[in-house]
Amino acid sequence: MGETVALVGVEESEAGRKLVDFIKRRAGKDLPTSAAMRWIRTGQVRVDGRRAGPYDRVVTGQIVRLPPFRPGGGGTRENGMTRSPDAPPLPPVVFEGEGLMVLAKPAGLPAHPGTGHADSVQTRLAAAFPDAAFIPAPVHRLDKDTTGLLVVATTHHAAREAAQAFREGRVEKDYLAWVLGSWRLCAPGETVPLRDRLAKTGPAGREKVHAGQEAGHEALALATPLLATPDRSLLRLRLVTGKTHQLRVQLASRNHPILGDPKYGPPGQGPGGQGLCLHCWRMALLGKTFELPPPWSNELAVPPEVLKAFAARTEEGRKIDDPGPTTKSGSRC
Image (cartoon, rainbow, N blue to C red; front, side):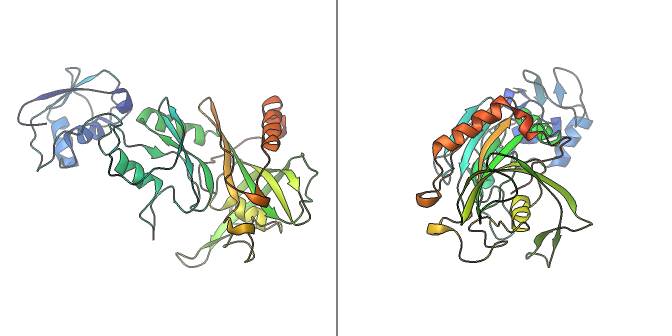
């Protein structure tokens, strides 16, 4: 923007944004929110020639009139998903299209920034696409050391649709985990529900989640053993609710901690130093299904035919996974 009135069109990736957010995005980071609100209040901003409210949501193709504004050294932000060549590398892309980008998150890289770690998938996305009309962002969480599918929204519309799907329990999230010991809660191929109440305890920064807490939040997952040896078992885990460390705590409380879990399992696990053996393998979201084999190798490698056979069973008869009413499942595991 500059010293003349600007007429800007709403791109598809911007549809659904609040008008005040759209103005700030287009005017640049130097525009204060108070200035954008004043423009709207005084009628200097028009949407298709009419006045609008700051929280009205813009629609693809609308023309927004913006008054003159000279940012302090910054120019108009460009639309589009042009990637910056100087940004840190992103995880491998499994799928991209229709407002979604699905990444293969590695162990050790948090999905979101937090205390003690500024580097994350979210910050790398922001650095990779600084001039996009909508900065891509993850729509769910994965623990730092959990590997697997991480779904990112690349448009505001897709972000809203995904958030609503999580709220309404319309997302299927299947994990794979190697756990300690031979699984005996159900026969191979059968499915057993894991129901608990979970609560955090401990000082800030060193909290742990515990099962069996009366004041805790209800947690539900479905476990199906796929392979078993005397020492360890491979489980498929359907996350129904989504609580912090849910699967790790539920399995540890049943004397089947996940291999390589330094927080909830005994030390010295994880054959071959492969870290936490928890992987987000399959997700069904917004009419699409994504799968990503786990990165484990040697004695922890999962035979492809095992996953293929179970995926086929899931598609043929979803009754094996009917836990009744569901709640949110967007939290990390």
